[in-house]
Length: 214
Image (cartoon, rainbow, N blue to C red; front, side):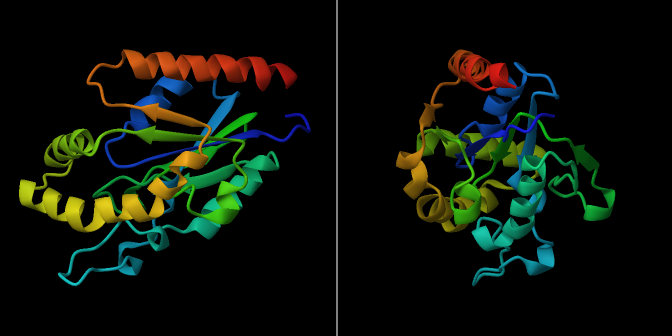
């Protein structure tokens, strides 16, 4: 890799906003030598260190539940052209069984997650901030579909987390940073064309401005 500083992109959005699908579309336009991705979810602290609410529910929707110091340290290593290793976070999979990921630095580095704009030292490293946005009713319906199928949650469990954890965290730790983002992507439709088109537009722009200088 050359001596140019990598171009750092932060991608954030609430639960059900479409971050995962957008990134899948976006990464499709690049090789692994051109882009690397690190996810905030892979930096969750052990469940024993997570806060529990007054009703005994673990609250995973708090910034202090993330090892942001390690996330920042790893990002700086990637910026310096080094590689990192990290265990992949997967819901209901213990750390011992988690897949070990080796991430190699690239000219474009993406950092995604709910709180990536909230941590000041991390946020100031971003050259581009992308905010994934969608109406609350739509994001709730997407959350219900995911948690019922993938996690086996009941509707009551999902609604409890949504009302007491998810939305308060979104409004306090993410929404205030929306207007500081250079790109806000509205994802209210149930069809994929808009996200596919937007991801291509941004990737084409970066190929012209960032990768041509590498």
